[in-house]
Length: 269
Image 1: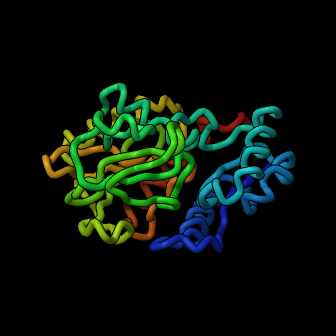
Image 2: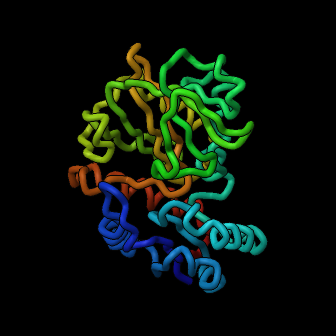
């Protein structure tokens, strides 16, 4: 039976073209697997006719939270393989991981969820406040005096970083890196050659997440001190910016993804 590839081809992502990326990726995956595309709202109903589900550019889950929760529960109950696996500990499970990583001393933008704990953050004149279930900067605000209730939102110091950089992995294997030289233009990306220290930074979070298979994107910012700090660990449906890659890098990524899927999917798929 074929694979069910979940995507929202028409989602109006700012600075990204979900549909183009998934058309490109599915055209390559069809060389190795029979597959069919569906919208995330249809995934639960269509899932029983497929061996496995691949969740790709399906848009922020908060736009269809009830449908996603139902899909996830049905997949777990039926034992249907979902790629990425539903055991992800990062964005797949909400933003609690930013609090957990802060408490554990990882190099992450310091994060609390209670205005009473602002003294635990670096001194700043402005704080970023974002929903715990946020995505795509939805609900993000900046304020000098956060007034949310305890546990209601994430609170971080606003950091005047030099640039953002993203590291892309398949399973535990690094594939490529891209960065946004202008902090005001997050999705205007160019290739980035990571240093050994950069890769060691990114691998800490891949190791922490313990996903044996899957695509992950480690988003970081270069702090004024020069160190990298984690912004987000995307393990649900990370956009890959494949259109920005040279053909040999695209080919290498697809080969890694095919190998990962073959190792992950049930025998005979």
